[in-house]
Image 1 (cartoon, rainbow, N blue to C red):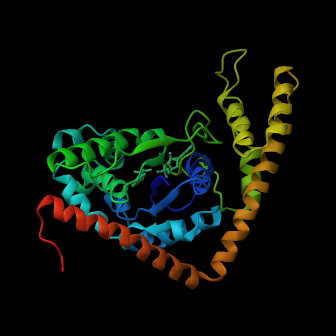
Image 2 (cartoon, rainbow, N blue to C red; image 1 turned 45 degrees about the vertical axis):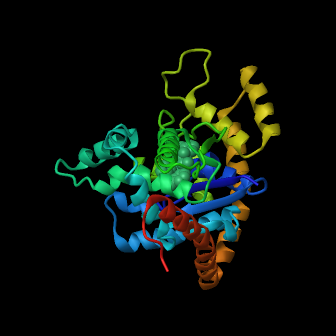
Length: 333
Ligand code: AMP
Ligand code: TRP
């Protein structure tokens, strides 16, 4: 069976964009592949953060993922597998300064830091972030990596690093991971559908999967449909986004019927919003129930994830034994 590996940063809330753009796909892949998913807390240390918040958000993300249908045996917390950092050092030594300098996410994130602070601290962790990501992927010999398009460059780097490692140490040891892009286009902000749904834009720009159902309804009902600058005869991004949500939720019957109304010039936006609100709330409802159940026994769930992380760690340790052998490091007792 082929290996699938992916990671998500513990950033607090989980929104509809994260769900339809990533997590829903991760859940489905579990039926077909040997899947391993990490909550990548080491990665979240690369930008300014608070220690307590990081730990809290890491567990929160674990609970969200389980509630969405990720199986506990497939889930680990990255920092409970410290071999990721060890491999990342080794891979860093076959990654050039030049290729890391070309990573656009590094540039985007430094710009983001300087936007609010002229003297912002840019950590070297942020610079070597893609090497740690390559370690996440290669340590489990992943064949496929489900990610958003924004991660394409990091995936290419992982392949290049695997190739260079194999050439330098004379063995086809690491696999060349391939990205699996989701079919869902970017989900847009309900408050400004010219931008993608994202937490960094502020609360009104994302729909929190585990927020109050009433708030979800309200946000959908007040979603911007017409920005006024859509050329005649074209569907505005806000309306497209609402149709996309119906499709992503799998309510194709309503999608097709409302689309027929739209084409006939008879669509009432209030009807479309009503249907989207209803469909999204129905989809989210069982996930929220599951989340509440998991929270009722927090300690047991946490123990389970400590356990699954320890199991997954064994695979990482095996890789590190082989890497030590190949690279000339002294073997551990
Ligand atoms: P982030 O929290 O932005 O790092 O995203 C985590 C995952 O969710 C990544 O795989 C993204 O590609 C995906 N994602 C984030 N925002 C959206 C969005 N608005 N639409 C679709 N996918 C998204
Ligand atoms: N960099 C990814 C993101 O921002 C998260 C990530 C870390 C990841 N390690 C990974 C994704 C390994 C896939 C595989 O979304």
